[in-house]
Length: 194
Figure 1 (cartoon, one colour):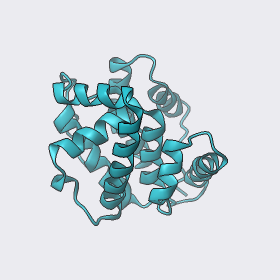
Figure 2 (cartoon, rainbow, N blue to C red):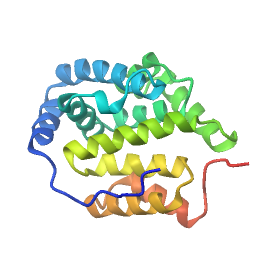
Figure 3 (cartoon, rainbow, N blue to C red):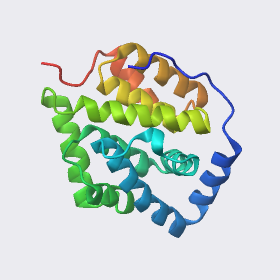
């Protein structure tokens, strides 16, 4: 597990431009999303290494996570649910309020909290490594940091969860995922371990 927490650094200008473009051009965002979901699934399944992605690919992944909560949530579902498919993730990003997306998200969370070792730790570690690669390119952003906090929590790494959730709160005081994680830690609510 990586114990070096990146400092709060200025966000890269290329990332800012990409995030702006994806948040205002919905057709471009949808096309980029589909291509990027394929890349993410390849990384999570181990058929592609995050270190082999170009800076442009990394920037696209980071921009989608930062500008789209449904994309961030799809990334988390893909990281936690070993049965999630690329089609499932497309449903979550393109039809986030559909019954299929809701069933996938609630089903994943139910299993995550109630079934010991539901997640594949190797898959989660690949997602964490990808997030580390993203922040190397873009700098630390609120949603990347919150996503990293959640995956640290899923890995039962309480210290890194606290550090990343607190860092997220410094970057964005209204980030609900960070607030949720800090509350969960305070109440000693954690994923199933036994």
